[in-house]
Image 1: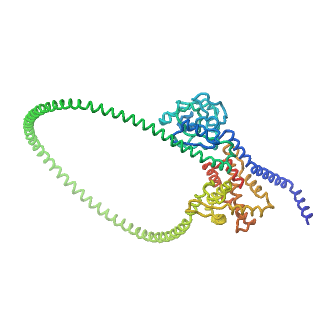
Image 2: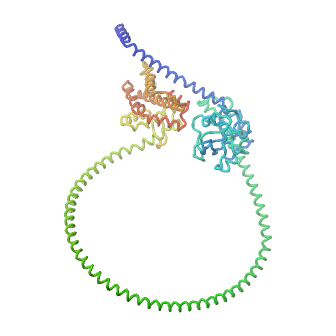
Image 3: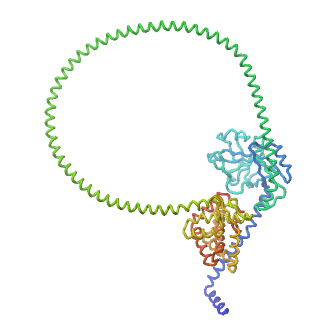
Length: 612
């Protein structure tokens, strides 16, 4: 029987050798690509850790609104385990980069031995008014550009920056900025375009705004051991920070009180001088006031005499004018009487002519009235007929409106019934953040918690696309044992997912390359990777990793506790994923953009998604 099947298979391969070789090549390519993705996780982690160690990225960043003194920096350098402590200054300022528009840049002080820049082009600054530019924002043809400190900056910023302009002499990368975002600002457009690194001499500040600490022999970054190692130093650092903050406050308070006391002494001296001179001034004022009073009495009497003379003159003038007016009025009355007589004669003649014209117009008006009366009666009859037809149409339309209103009320009841359940699930969806910090988990595996958190967020986002997917997502949430506390946080255990993963590996161990074949097909279906630019390439990789993570999660959960755990259940889950995510480009892009907006589109995050 086996020989017959083998002979049949060989004959079929010979008859379609080209198709067999094509399928074999596709499978080989997919397996090789996916194996490379799986193997690149530790390489990416090692590369990131090596870069941070080489550039000596800080382990602790200490901030103070009161500022740090040189003594503060020295005290932190003496802490056990600290290899370097460096004070630094930073500021956001407005400048122009050649296009005439204002741009917000963040200026950092160059620190010796901590946060070392990686020079891409040009040279290091040699003068205090030279700087290194952000290699992502500036280009090589912008080397030598002068960045002015605009007058639109506030006074504190202009005083902090020692020079009115800085010259870009080199392009660099900084370990402080590991992603594309450069942060926000309270000035300008609110978004920071890039950064510049300026020597400490380029700032005019007696204190530091921040202190960077690097510790001795740290474990690899982005690891649980590194977090635990930092927690061991944190109490000592925080205790010293609190102590130095109190000393700094006491110094500033003492200095301010000294200035206040000096000012109070100056005020007391001023009051004494004021009271000494006040007596002499008041005596002089009394003498001047008496002289003014005497002069005012003489002036008032002269003013009264002058006013009486003006009144007598004005009365005589009025009497003269009244006489002239009476004479002119008499003359006018005579002329008006003569004119009125002539006008009356003309009006009499005009009245007789108007009476004849009015009689003629009255006769013509009666004829037009009778004609218009007949036309109006005909129009009234036509309007009454239209009114009767309109009332009949109104009654028919009213009946249709009432039927439609009843249907609308039924639909609103159904909509209200659906909306009662919607807020609870929306609150649950919002309560699942994209980092493990939003989960209350019973285990301490932060990578597994982050993988599960990311896919639960995707599951809740897609559940409203169809009723079938809604039911499936409800079954998955129930299987994971999700409970809510005040609809604010989600508590889950990783145990249900781990049990489902073990069952999945047991049920499909004979098809160990199933996911590799599936993701190879998706890879070609989505025309990946996008190599039009570096940013497009990384976005396509993030999109593919997020898609693989959700396919992996749904495949594993098809073997959850209480399910059949067979091929039908697996295909049911994967078909829903394809319909809601693979064939929905808007949803894929929205989920990918959320990772960038939340600063989660990092190599470490992608490694966790691939390691689920």
